[in-house]
Image (cartoon, rainbow, N blue to C red; front, top):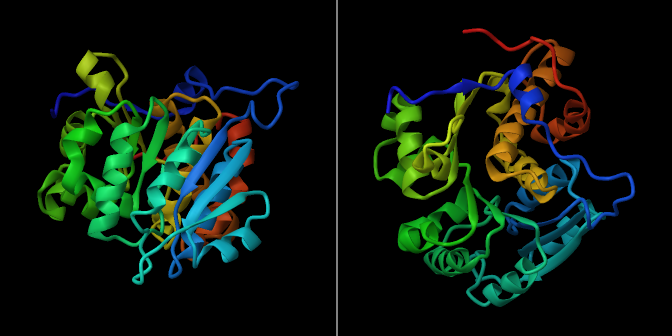
Length: 311
């Protein structure tokens, strides 16, 4: 594991792996349809951040499926979206009855983000696990509370057709792997490779140096299956930052970017946005997750110079 070849994300790597650009004659359908399943009454902002991030990354049409108590707030805050209110339990988690509506919306999506701001429950884990296992071959970013679906249906999900992208923080990664958080923090690359292979997924292992690992490509022996990212700063360790990352990746995937490239570019754009904000305000502390989003369109337009932080 320690000998796995890791390629740093650099200006040269970004030039070799460009994002697809829509035709000037294309409409919003041609730019891709993103479905974001996120948010609860306690955390409507997570749905908002992830949804707006997907649009900033270039997705053409946005649908948000959120708990009924959050739906009016999300609809008012994101007028560009179609917002669907899903049934929820008394505790505020998605109800099992939400599955049929989610399945219907999934049929028209080019990419899906699921998890930001959802409240975890056993019933929701079973419902999402069954749904994830039956998804067709489309990219699905699985984040936050949606990762609990692997507690019960890991093998069924891993054997499904969906192009899975997992974006856990260290604690969530430890739960997925059945180990302690300190182990993940000490050996992120090794355990990230284990996770990516086990769940046949593209996995992000977050940290001061983040890794993006393509499990299916590793199994196939494909070169370039692991990249590292050293852009970014400690200011990104703030509430809502992970929600923006999941949305950026989902938006890039909806545009037609393959799962690994969408994830690597998403990690880079998220981190580079943090660097841009830190430079503008004179330090890395104090910027907000929602402020990252305005940086994304500009950063997508030009490959950067050689400003990568050296370690």
